Length: 170
Image (cartoon, rainbow, N blue to C red; front, top):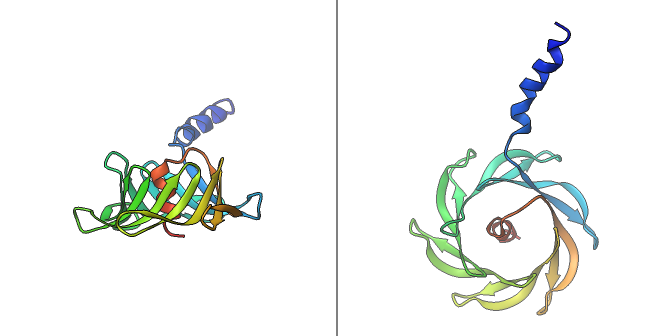
């Protein structure tokens, strides 16, 4: 019986080790991006609000459709697809509305590793909003997106659509 316990324990824990890879987006502080508590957890095509400092999955905030480039609001905490929130067109994230995701005003514009606020339906480049530096996202300011303090640190692989959807809220 004593020899079966480790084997039984290993078999019980095997499904937990084979779980899907999660990406944790943590708050970051200061100019060097000192990691803090978890803010969001991205699991497949769902963006969860973090529940606790270690990155437990909380309620779903956004549901992604990477093939269509559309970000939906979550209809409930379990991740059912609700109304469209954003659509990605090239290097732009555009707010959309209605069941057919009718494009509206531009939210964010990606230019290399710099993210600018988008102005109007033609996505005119506005003020700098964020600066992507490896796995750290910094706040940016001014017309040239000069680096400010860190906002997020990303642990894992994060699709660009998910990152832009998270940044659109700031």
